Image (tube, rainbow, N blue to C red):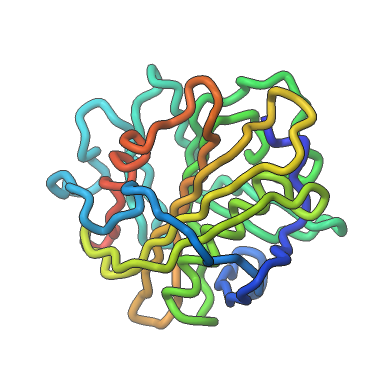
Length: 255
């Protein structure tokens, strides 16, 4: 898959956004292009959410629950039989710059269909990133810079850039405007990044991908994000409906 292509984040496009991510030690300022974007229905705040379960119980029968207390998110993914893996809450997934410094980091994560590619893990991936998966979900953030809307767009764009080419093979990124997200005890924003991969040296690299984010602000003023990025245009890729169903389970740990 795309893991042999990834490098530093540094989206060289039109609109500068400020992103909060204390997982990397400070905020990141990246650029994304919002012009002409179209957000799939999976990013809609009008998704039909299931009834909120209590505690760590899944909201969909047979699914696995992931809780990210640090970022105040809880969500569900399908079970192991459906090729989903949920990591320990504090396991970090990260991509680094040319100096080895983490740029984007997530915890409270999970992967879909790991190891489906014969390519070597990307050398700029840290922790459990770069496992040849078809999709990854996790949480990030913790800073106070920028608005909640900016951070929703920034997280979607930055993860799309990092996971599908980085500085070495810059993908084309189009990020939607942020839309209100109000369910599961969260009153935040969601944004969608459409990714076109610009360098495909092997069939392991998908032609395109999609990234969805959900951003929420805590009472202390810190902003936290939930992100899913998924290969598209390859066998066994998640459909828009499957992504939407996962997103419909996103909820606050305080709800």
